[in-house]
Amino acid sequence: MNYDIKMEEEINKISESLPTLLLHACCAPCSSSCIERLSKYFKITIFYYNPNITDKEEYKKRLEEVKKFIKKFKTENEVEVIGGRYNPDEFFEIAKGLENEPERGARCYKCYNLRLEESAKYASDNNYDYFATTLTLSPYKKADWINKIGEELDKKYKSKYLYSDFKKKNGYKRSIELSNEYGLYRQNYCGCIYSIKGE
Image: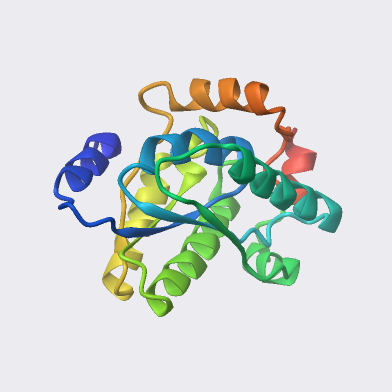
């Protein structure tokens, strides 16, 4: 399945009105090229919900980088940032029994599901037209897993899931360029204590 084409097909259906998109984001670098690509088609709100980030200072640092980037980056339509609640226990609860799983294994799948479900719920409760995630930008994340989770949540909540594979069309390369241009902090692990050990 080419999820990038599916996203383009959905964008092509958009009329003259500007739909709202709640875009779950894990960090500023991953947000950068996604926002660049989508901001002319949607009124975007970045939803920073990442209880998987074990260290509180790291969590705050990444959130501040997202805010810093949004403040500096010029977009056709305004982009807002919302910080979700921060409770690492939510992540540890879903990770129980999976502590020794390898990176990109079952623990990661449950983590994607945790963050996407909270995003879908927030989008639905607050009447966003669409929800999506920047997670598909990373070459270390399984886009098929992420999109299948989004597809299931689309059936459960009223906001529509926007398929994506943001690493396509040099999205990941572009995120590195924008990170360098704007001096963004690029972390070398996903966020949880297990991903640090897995490096």
